[in-house]
Length: 134
Image (cartoon, rainbow, N blue to C red; front, side, top):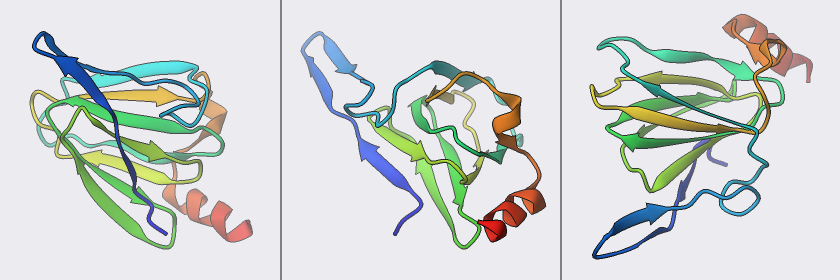
């Protein structure tokens, strides 16, 4: 089973341009309660370095590109996000990191719940410990 659940999003359009639709419980497999985006990440800066106890997320690179690292405690997979028509789903209890942001990168993230600091696991050794207790 792959850690990287990369989904092709349907691109609609005609001579006027293109449109990508994201719909809860359709092409996004959860209700969307929060939307945010990362942009202007300085060269050499990486983001993420955490997992969530319960939160589900979908990330779409609407401009530019970045490298996503996904880790379930047993295996690590990487993928380059560089298309606004692809979404990567981040399940709960997946350690994730974002690296190598291009200068024009805009990474859009859809989340299944509101921000809750208690849901974050920011220490890798704690993450591994929680997995070993499960």
